[in-house]
Image 1 (cartoon, rainbow, N blue to C red):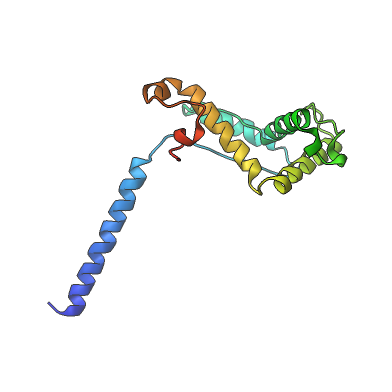
Image 2: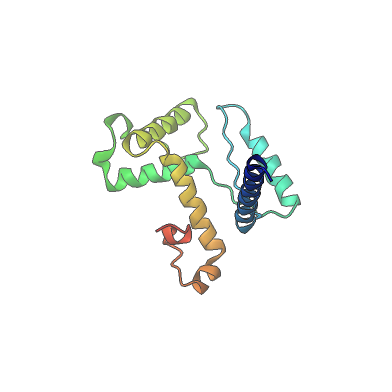
Length: 164
């Protein structure tokens, strides 16, 4: 066997092992859980898309947990406004975001301003972090017996997510 053939055989074997290793890792993480994120411009009728998607997923047996990031933004902003009002910029102190049913132009502008405030004050991906935290919280509530068996506190998101 020549050196070139020997090297090719070794490389082919190495690639095959890596593929198998990756495949095994993927199989080990297999889950029927879907996390779908949708976004669109104001007025695009995203609610129709959401309703059709929810209906289709329910028909094939999925449990639906609907999370609206604007609700999480509103809740977090109200908590900060209540507990630490001095952290809120003057132009945001008196805005009304109490009703998500208020679909006015000002309502959407206020939500965008608050989102910008969060990204500037914390991290650029802070809104996504709110979403992940909410998913983690809901998983714990849906599967609390699992966490009890593992002696893991469902409120400790780092342990739940396998982080240290």
